[in-house]
Amino acid sequence: MTDERDGAGTPDDSAADGHPRTRRRRRRRARNAEVGGTGGESAAKPVSEPVPDGAGPVSEDKPGGSPGAAADNVPEAAEAGEAPAADGDRTESAERIEREHAEGAGGSGATADTATAPAPASEESGSEGASAAGTASEKQPAAGGEADEKAVSVQDAPTGEATSGASSRKSSGAKSAARDGSSAAPAPKSGAARGRSRGKLAAVVSVSGELLITAGVVLALFVVYSLWWTNVLANREADRESDRVRDNWAADRDVGANTPTGPGKLDTRDGIGFLHAPGLGKKEILIKPGTDPKELNQGIAGYYKKPVKSAMPWDESGNFSLAAHRDGHGAKFHNIHKLKDGDPLVFETKDTWYVYEVYSSLPETSKYNTEVLDAIPKESGATEKSRYITLTTCTPVYTSNYRYIVWGELVRTEKVDADRTPPAELG
Image (tube, rainbow, N blue to C red; front, side, top):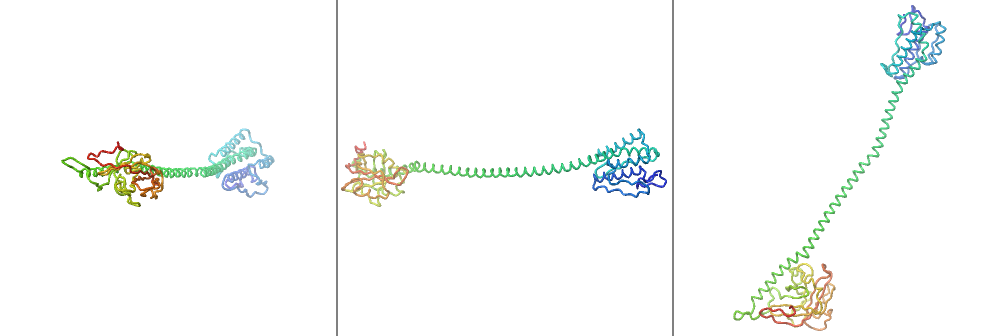
């Protein structure tokens, strides 16, 4: 019998070491080892076993499954007198080899790291069966080698290609992800930055808008307060003051036999009198001393005490100079621009009517121009002493940059009767 574990025959073996069957086994081992080395962790090393004397050399230069090896060994089998195997045996052996090769190529039970050697031929088949199997094996090495190489290629190539393909896909995916990340990452950041910028801009615009609206509302309220509400308050105060003056005058009338006979003597305790100017409006204006804002804000007209002291209407000569607001706080001289030459200006005291007539005006002059208050206001065209009246106020409207001036001259005086009948100029 032949020991297949070490490939060496016993003395009783029917074939020598150089028998084709022994060579076929060695080639099969070498081919299987090469298959394992090609698909496994390391390449197969050439098989080197001692060959008995007289045995033909075994070609180890080429793989057992290669076409060259089969071509070199086929003549040796012919020279050894091996008879060709029967068609049936050869067909069965070829089918078994092809099936084994197909199983190896399909990966059934074998991997790239472990290659399974074909099962040895049965020892019980006899020498003829062994010879026939050997002959059949010798006649099919080329096809078997090609099948083994194809199996190796089928097993190795898909694995390598799959690995390299997967690596390539992973690498491509990583690169693509990197590209996508590098190109897409700025977009969210840029969008977020734009969103934050828009949010900040919107907040600034919103705050600015609210501030502007608040400022507008405050300004509107200030305008309403200055031009309307202060008038309401000043007129109320002026009306109270005027009523007090009238009450005092009424209490001091001359009464005889229970009948008033005259207004009484001059009384200037709460105000020296009232200015009536149809061109300014129908309502009378209380005249009190002083031209400071705290005095004019009461809705009255004040006579100057400084920088030039005003003369009084009952003085023999001089300039009776007055001032009042043009806008707000009663705005008693608001319509000063409507006064024309010849318009009457009537001043009422407790006992006398002083009738003046407008003769000149100055639409604009410096606020520091005090010459308009002189006893003889030369800027008005006056050249001699007389009894003048001067009205001053701010200009343009809603400002206090300049002063608007109107001059009048006393035309006549009229005593107040018991009924306080107004002069004809007042209708």
